[in-house]
Image (cartoon, rainbow, N blue to C red):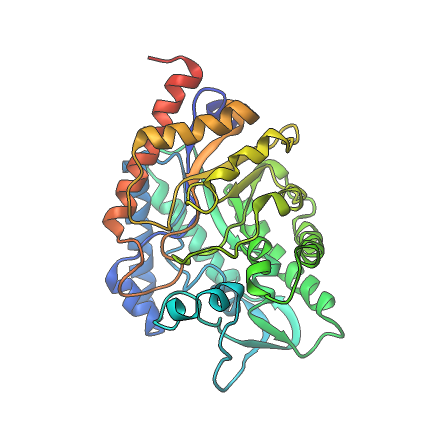
Length: 381
C-alpha cells in the first residue's frame, strides 16, 4: 500500500482529528440545527478542511470531525437505547480541579459531560450519519493530494462515561454492548477504505478523573477497557487501525496526569498498528525516553505528538525535527509518523482555545519539521 511505501521513504505527517469549524457551522451546531441547509454546510466545511490540510503538507488527512458536536458526544446521537437524564448535571471532579480550584473556578476546561441513561438494549442507529460522513469525505478527497485518509470514532470506554447504566445487569455487560454497537461504525469506516482511528483519551485520563483511585487500580480498569475495545475490533485488519490516547484538550497545569510509562504497555495491547499519544506539551515531552526501555512490537508504528494543542506558541520546524529524530533513533525511522498531541476543536465554541490561524501555522511547521527530519534520517539533500 502507498502508506507502507511512503513510510519507508520519509517521515509522514498527520494529526489527531478535530479541526476548527467555520463560525457559521459552529453556530448551527450549537443551536441544534438540522436539515438540508445544515447538511450542505457540513459538506462544504469538510471540503474546505480537506483542502487546508493538504495545503499545509499533511499526508494522512481526515474530515476534521466537522459533523460531530464532540469527539465522543456525537455517539449519543448514533446509539439506540439511551435517554437524556434530566436535571442539573453534577460538577465534574478530578485531581486537576482539586489541585487548582482557583484556576478552574473561572470557567476553564473541565465541565461535566452530558448525561445519558441506558434504558434499553444498546444498538447502532447511526448508519445514515456515518454514511454521510463517508460520502462527504470521499467527495472532498477528489483532486486533493494525500497519502492516506483516517476517520476518528470513539472508543467504548470513552462513551461509557457519558452514560449511566440503568438496563444491563452490570457495567461490564453494558460496556460490551457499547463495544458491539460501535463495531458497526468501525466496520463502516474500514469498508469505506479509510484508516480507523479509535479515540480513547480515557485510557490515560481515568487516573486524573478519579481522585480516589490508585495507579494500580486505574491500570486494572484500563486493561478491562482494552479487552472491550479489542472485542469491538475483532477481525478488523490491524494495519488499518490507529489508537489514540491523550490527556484531553485542557489547557491547564496538568500536574495530575498519569505518566505515560504507567499505561504504555496497556495501550500497546490494543489490536492496532499505529499508536498516537501526547509527546510535545511541556508536561510529557520528556517521556520520549520511555522508548529506550519499551520495545515497540514488530510491525507496529508510533504517532507521537510533535506539535501541541496546549499552547498557542507555534513550534519552530527545527524543534519539530528534533522531536521526530529522537523517536526515530529509538524505534526506527520507518516506524514514526509525526502528529499533533490532540485535536484542536473537539466541540463547537465561539472562541476556540487555539485560533484557526495558529492551528494552520502549527501544521505548516509540522510539515516543515518532518521534511527536515527526513533530510537527517535518510540523508536527503
